[in-house]
Length: 241
Image (tube, rainbow, N blue to C red):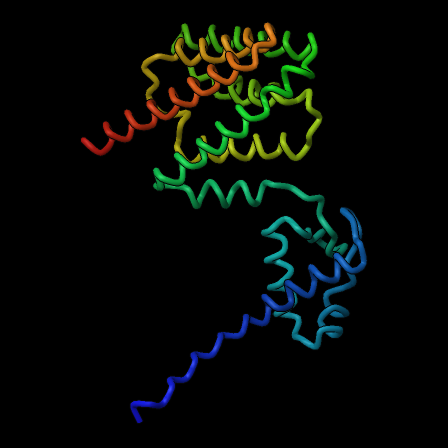
């Protein structure tokens, strides 16, 4: 008996509502349905797939949570315009209490922004530069009052790359910024040097205005190093209590 090979464990079949989800996504793709297009009634879809209405409802609820479809009460189920929000919410939740993941997310942001700042310097116009300077002035005012300037900070990073007209890039920057801030609770961390944070942003803008790519990258690197130090300091203080 010792020479006999063991049985290979059976793969667990997916739950029925998961299979129905995949079928619905394939239906949307095969029929090239766009945002706002209606799906057939639940009863019809259930009959087509040979499943019960409960399985169909579970599948639709799951697709709603992913932002793929939306149910309009009394009207029906419709394809929803794509949004990163469900991904963003899940990402921020999943990163809670994980310093390593927060640090990795910070590093992705750093690499993304330093890698693309050169293109911004080639393309940025006077209007975007003026708006960047406006945001840094607001940051300075808030820093002098020891107030949070999270909204201005987020707007600043959006404006850095607005001139590139890259919708996917803009969404990714927002995802990384918001998820990082939610997961690290960065807005509520004690920053002993808010004016240094303002100065980072100010010098980034001046480097862009002078079309100095290397300087802009250096200042972005310094900015993200500062973020890393603030997080590390607050984590150490928390663990010591």
